Image (cartoon, rainbow, N blue to C red):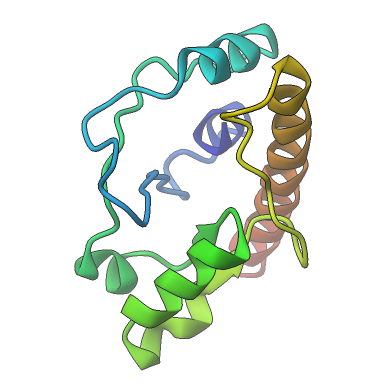
Length: 133
């Protein structure tokens, strides 16, 4: 979703986006079909995404590393070199984005609402950084 928003804003040359997880459960797999369907209805195409695990090199390579919840943030903090920890943050400030996997369609819609809001806020923040130069 964030990559799509970056592209729509015309900032794909200034903002590089990747997605990775803290575990290797689904490495190489596409997102859950339900997540893809709900996202597609909002105009986001997730079909090309494939899961990968966060690599040690990611901590140095990226300016911002976003976690969906506090549990994942703790894992990132544990694995992150001390000098890179300032790059870590939650997507939605002060709030966990829940995992909708075991719930119904309303859970996926709620998560998309949270993620979309968090992504728009992050994009606004990064635009400000870019224009401030």
